[in-house]
Length: 209
Image: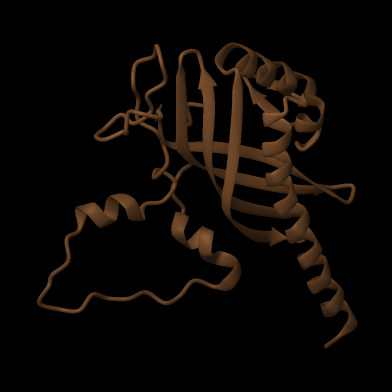
């Protein structure tokens, strides 16, 4: 193996671990309300929305969200898929199951994050983090049926958990012919699994709070 190839593979391993640490640090800093540590995980010029950018704007937005909606939270991260688009950029999906103390109700949630990561001056940061929700509901009220986002005191709405991937709609739209075997596509390349599942679909409009 050539030295340059070996160094590139080592860099990829170290970068993968650094990105994986971002997800864990995100959950811990959010749940412990260390907002300086939290916003430091994002690129310095992070876009916050409404034409606002930067960590100070992000800190103000997160503070307002946490202070007025929740008393306490706990984010439990699950599987994490990371794919590199070049040595300094990557995308990823992280599953997260969360708990929220909100008023008189204990709200549980299932979601995933669609992430963009960027290495800046040798450090990995979140460039963008899109929360895609499946459900949010009181612990004692299973979210059966449509409109699974059921926050206390708000009208229920539909989450975007499945909207990133066209396969969800395709599965329910195309019932199999049980008289013939189905066609099977070729496996996706190692660093193209997420891209293959997305199939160029547009990013859904995310309602974050």
